Length: 56
Image 1 (cartoon, rainbow, N blue to C red):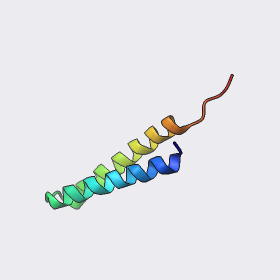
Image 2: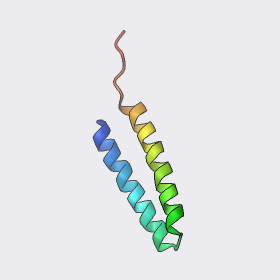
Image 3: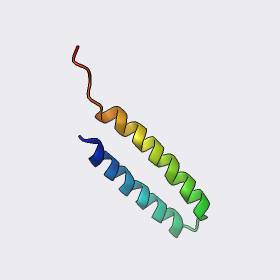
């Protein structure tokens, strides 16, 4: 799986969670903080899952 496809999935997931939080009445600051944390975790996970292994 390529990193770009993984990142698109993470962004769609974050958008859904952010929309759900806004409908629930959570303040925008908390939604932004949660989205930033999830994006960072998504990038870290994506890099570890999609990096190519060294063939030694």
